[in-house]
Length: 143
Image (cartoon, rainbow, N blue to C red):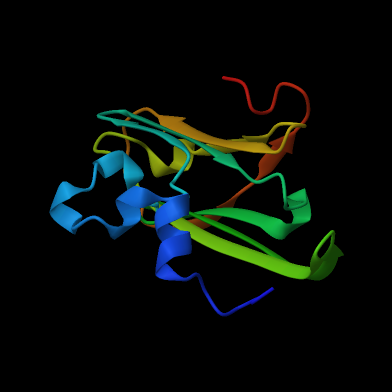
């Protein structure tokens, strides 16, 4: 095995023939994502909702904050063993609240399956920073 040495051009062509095509001939669906995505996000005037898969983090490792007109999500865990060796994970997400959404109305919940839901509605204004508590339980992720 040539671990860590990359693939030969012929091996790459056999695995993914589109990868060697000029960029203007590649189908958009062939492109590999560089970001796993923000989860399911609903942004509308007067309404905000986000669903994030955080199953790799314990509730104590996740924080949700409202900073001005943004919601910030941070999750981090130290290095721990897994089936391939050791891994550490961390992510930061920041979402701008839509017009008409009251930052003081932001709530969050964590389902037993590891889905973090954050939602808010109702008009208002606030520029203070506050930590949003994460409710846990069978109905925490449902709205």
